[in-house]
Image (tube, rainbow, N blue to C red; front, side, top):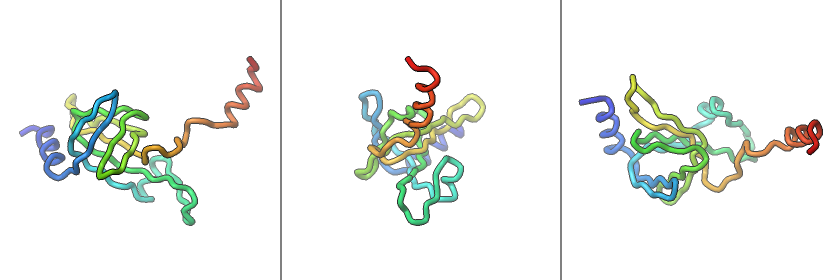
Length: 129
């Protein structure tokens, strides 16, 4: 049995039911989805705030490679909760795609890096148009 078949079988066997929505289509499949703890967040740009003022929840998704995800577009729904894909990659062994992994944030939360007021103001100050 190939590595891809083993991974697909185990995701199907032990993963949770999820719905992927992207490009106007819904896909029902199985995947692993778990919260990233503080020790994991330091590697993906998370911030530690002991008083909990900022909500920066991030989740790890691992699913079948046949379902390629799209950053900032794919929405994953599991048990009534929705998440949007912030970063995703396909894991390959040699030339074979084995699984898709992604970093998710709760759907509808403010995007962290969409707008930086300082750089926009600097750009207009140096290049008024």
